[in-house]
Length: 570
Image (cartoon, rainbow, N blue to C red):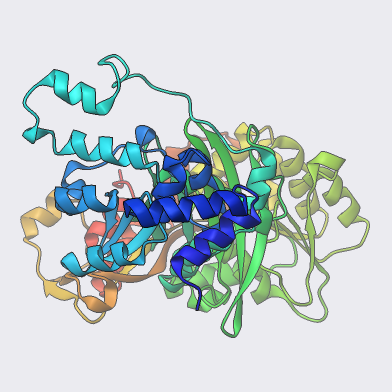
């Protein structure tokens, strides 16, 4: 096995940074003066320290960080005693759990890693930094032993003004980014983030650069949680790796980009949808995890109340009309849309979908992805679809007049059209159609069903606990219990199975309007949202909050969750 000295020699000779003659001189100087070969080479001015650090970073696959642009927590620096930090020229820059990111002047010194690891049982994540910068950082954070401000500025080697001066960050070139994206460390770190997101059943991964760190957050059961922070310098390598995986332009940093990729985890494949957004401190990455094993795409397994499913299935069996699934972003309307299409699907039906981006591939169903950049818009695709005599048309979202106009006219001419819309309530979706420019008489004739939904977190069945609410509090909260004398609710407690959150998984709550003659008349009269909602409630519609309370009484979720995603009923 090659020694550390042999390894360093091989790196320097292979990169033509040192001749054999210079290497011989450096070995003689090391033997005479002691110390390590690295210091001897730098001391003889054969190579600059920053050049050596860059080559080591590239050869070892370790990040190279500039401590002058790095904000460090003083408590983290002082994990390692000053005498050890000075002897080995090391300084901790961040800590996550029992993992320390350690800036090292000599990353080949494995004895340093072993020594630091033994101090507190830490795992070490080594990065490379300039030795003088490390010593200045140590002096700065242990400055309580320095007598005067002048002496402090002297060891920092900067003026008082430069201590707060913001310097422009130097970005790697496109060629360097392309090389970085293929390095082992970039691949390993990116894979680690993605694998952990899938393992923890996250729906989204956010990779966000800030002035002094890189933050990674997972959205689990609709709640964002901070998982890790990394040194800022590894941001370009992670973003470049994700761009390479998604077949995006690595050299483009000024414009947003969207893409997707697929990975295999054990025996299942998982799709990932990627969005890159340029921000002040770099490109933010949002990865949507489309795990088919999490989404059953079965309308009966979405968690809706039986009466909600009955209304939805009744509308789906109609030969024609417009069905709208509504909700804000992240409310699960896309899964409901696909599940409804699967429910309708049969061998005697011609079903075609028009989508921004095909999130779930449905066997036996024709799916079309729009491409506005080449003129393949929702409207143009819909016109072409109508010439193929479809029975059912699914539109991922109606968001402009041209699309909704064709959708409404398709529903009027013998087609069943299913789509989503950004609306908060069922009555609000009806009013939105009119506000988008559709004539009330067309809405009245085409629309057959509107459902608004939300996702709430399910209480962990292993640790939930039962409690009773005071009746006065029920009145204050305007909770109607329809004759239930002794209502019992459940609260989230937290255990190991649910990562101490008290929740595990999600379920749906919803409100549905099957358009009656009375509601249709209100549409023709251009009635406001409040009036339509009141009429629907008189005809038996349960609001989102009322349906959520029913789910809470069943022990599926908590009142806190219901109140988090719904507004009080008037």
